[in-house]
Image (cartoon, rainbow, N blue to C red):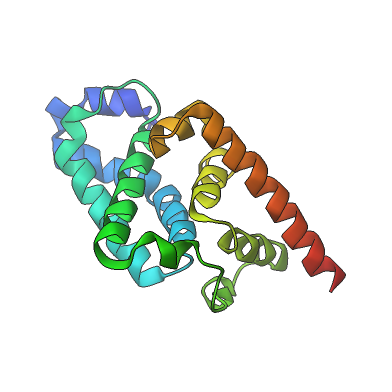
Length: 179
């Protein structure tokens, strides 16, 4: 079967139906969205599940509002980020998320390689803005401009978060290698 681009798939929306098209979209992007939410929630898998479900539910309801400009994964990432922020505002508050890590989340990533575990642990030590900027730009391949749109921040601010986050990651990983 020929793999359709996102735009080709969405163009077939009236013919195939929203549920069929959306099933393909979920299959295509669920790992990216869940990975982003994993980093945002500092490895809280129950919350990742809830927020991923809410993300795709909102996207399903709003699929007709997607303009077709930009990357569909970016549009979905923005919805996921907004779902996360709504959860934080409603249930937890920002302070809890930006405090230093109080407990070790390594059990959630124990099946991954040691290098990946080190990077994941280091990512969990970044503040929220640095984590999402690094995740969007480096892990998911979005441009700084796309990340700025997703995060609803100025371009320069996103670039600063990426640079500071990378510098912190380097220090954290180097300190771990020396111990």
